[in-house]
Image 1 (cartoon, rainbow, N blue to C red):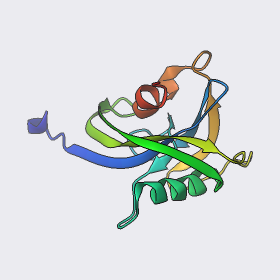
Image 2: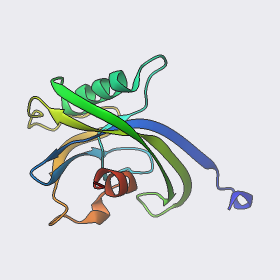
Image 3: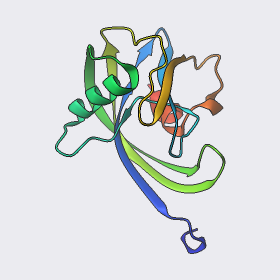
Length: 143
């Protein structure tokens, strides 16, 4: 595909797996390959920022929470070949995910960040998996 103008894209981020009563907390993405889809809260570390510091900052920005407990991180790597709109892409998504326990409920009003528009609980027994990013579906819902 490279010969036809398709460029490789690489991204590294740290993400939270927040579960409660069988539900997974997700944010709605407003840009990037997951635009319009439900995704895991988190993002890229800033220079000199640890993974824990980055995840705390991202959860403050995206969910408005600061009281939380972060478990151990585990690494992941996924390849995404289609964006949310169906366009062919070559996106290599690498990162680390941690189980997170919130010490407070996120504010109920929709909180927007630079790349998210609010949050919601995803019910894997009832909700449509097609509304989730590949990251949320494959890594977030994994045991």
